[in-house]
Amino acid sequence: MEMTKRINYKNDLPNELIMEILTRLPVKSLMRFKCVSKLWFAIISNDSFAKSHFERSASSSHRILCHGDGELRSIDPDLLFHKDPHTTKLSIPYSLSAYVRIQGSCRGFIMLQEFPDLVIWNPSTGVNKRISYDHLSPGNLESGIILDSFMFGFGYDARRDDYLAIIVWCDVNGRRFLEYFSVRINKWERVEIALPRPSMDAAASLSSPGYYLNGAIHWDTSSDSILVFDMIEREFFEIPLPEPLGKEFMSCCLELLGGFLCLSVWRESKKTEIWVMKEYGVASSWTVYRIPKSNFDPLYFTKSDEIIGFPSLGGLAKYDEKGELRECMENWNYEYHFWMYLESLLSLPSSSGIAWKEE
Amino acid sequence: MELLCIRQWISGLLPTWLSAWCIKPVGGALVRQEPEYILLALMGSPLKKIMLCSSEKEIFSVEEQVMVQHSVIINNMIEDGSYNHEESKIPLDCVDSKTLKKVIDYCTHHTHHHNDNQEDLEAWDAQFLNVDSNGLYDLLMAANYLEIRNLLDLIYGTIKNMIKGKKIDEIRRIFNIKDHGFTPEEEEQNRKEYPHFY
Image 1: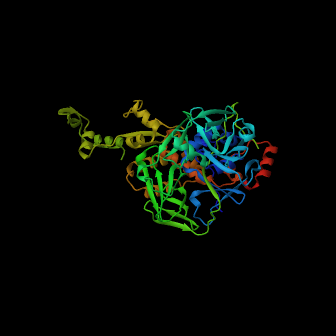
Image 2 (image 1 turned 90 degrees about the vertical axis):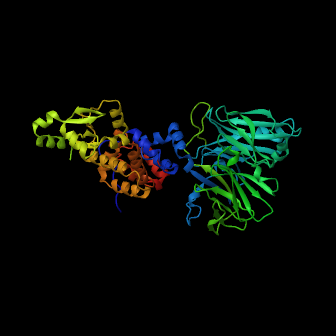
Image 3 (image 1 turned 180 degrees about the vertical axis):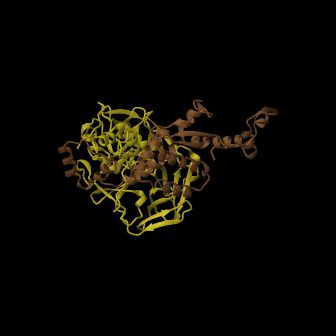
């Protein structure tokens, strides 16, 4: 076996050049290379390095979290159709049960939820933080909470460099509250709110998970628009559904695929329409993909503008913009739940400025 | 042939009275001009060149345009006027002749072939980086010193691919890391916890 050439033989490479090399490596390699030397450990563990690495590689570090059979696995979406997709088994932190739900992801962190705990977890580094929302259990509040009304979300506030875990809930008197936990302040705050559109109140009890994108959390409310919470302004807005979509459909679900907001629309016809908002916030950028399968469940939107997903009769399929089948695979277990996340080295800020690491 | 040599050769051939009376039209007027420049002007305009001097005091003449396009450092020197075309050479004390020649080769190729298709350029780049073990280090240091962005990106990309899947011991060998800095206990702990890394 040919020995790889040595890179330096004279003096050690200056630190800036080592950083330039390291900043181009994937997260998995970097976690391993922490063992190379004390210097490499220090560089890779450094918060600023993690931030600049994330900014540089965010668009190319998508992973799919696959939850089923009591296991959590991580899959590289580019390898979905390979015979051996090199899935990585992950250990569920805090021994949460197999019933744990994924309620949001942001900048490499995933929020897991199982009453009464929320766990913010970075699967790439193992760093995690547990937050209890026990105070919202029905026995602990004077006016009754409608448990079914909980809407969870998790996002990043770029102005304050802070992460918020959010629960929007409703009491028996119809009053709506925003309960949020700031990682920096390390406690829950509550504020009474009104949703931007009255029709959302009824629909919002369907507890869809919150999708974090571009500094805001998005929920599916099955009404005429998408409910949006801006992390910096701490206010609710709405993104209307595209007009050409019309009203004649059996169901319309919000998804987040590969960094784009998508609507998965099932109509009477034997096709599924996937509406992709190619430019965030730009109404005219909604583009339709017509998949010639009914009940097609989309999973991922590739860099070459193709949609990968599950046709209802099983297997995995990839379609292009024209609705043509590009690739398909028969054996794919659809009993799992899937969630998109990014790989990152980021750690959570703490109120004292030291990164959290709890086991 | 070097510009300097051409000038000397031509002026050696011409009779002295001609040198005294040579005139050339410049902007509508007739101006006295060295005859060798006129001859060159008739042949085609001479390309402006600059002189780079390696650590071994060897001088390399390169088209100014080529280096200015690629090296931020050289571009700044030319722009702020600290380089005098008639007399100066740019001393590059930390770049040896072999490496400087390679760097000039890279910049020249990319300037003259920038319209080539991507595949051909990438093939040329791959061949270019097929250097011996010490050469990559020297190229990296030179490209960093001269601030040649695309050459740096190329080298970093190559290094990244070289080390991506490697084991820890191999990485230490590649980067010549003799003292990893961990205490014997820390090193042992790491090896026990992650044996497959090594």
